[in-house]
Image (tube, rainbow, N blue to C red):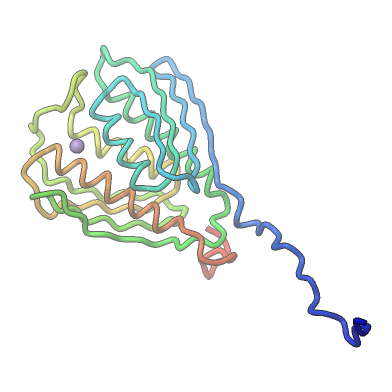
Amino acid sequence: MTPAPTSDPEPVRAPPQAQPTASRRKGSVRRETKETTVEVTVDVDGSGTTSIDTGLPFFDHMLAQLGRHGGFDLGVRARGDLAVDAHHTVEDVGIVLGQALAGAIGDKAGIRRFASISLPLDEALVEVALDVSGRPFLAYGSGLSPTAAALGEPPFDPQLAEEFWRAMVGAAGLTLHVRVVAGVNTHHVLEASFKAVARCLRDALRRESNAVPSTKGVL
Ligand SMILES: [Mn+2]
């Protein structure tokens, strides 16, 4: 005969509730002007899956680095006035990506906020420091000659990388420093810089708590 229990068994714990911070941070923006039509979707808590089509193969290659090494799912589709040149398309993708990121990260609760890296790609070495500050600021030194040859077809002028970062940080409210320490090959220098920013975004947007990481209480 089994004796009746004399005390309550260990209380059954409720299954863990999904924390508010466990929700996936997603943003989606579509922007249409007379120069470009750009659609961006971003899932900051994704897995680095990308689907990129801007009409500029080299830029696609760079944006794929951003998503893959940023650890976020990134969809970009852009149709721009490439017959003029790539400028409007690149700049507008930066604006829309920045807006989508801002929407995804919301009030920035719990994020690490700061990140930096020194990232090599063969002979190229790029330093990046990032603050998800809410204050747009870009310091950019590519070290590349203004006459460095364009990449891909249709051509991506290497100078457009700076325009892209300025547009993105302006729309997302990021403080971003990109400094090329060494590098000869243009493809390597640009790719290292995109990978470095990606890695910093991944680290800075990682959630470490539920608090907004500012003594002001807001970012
Ligand atoms: Mn490459």
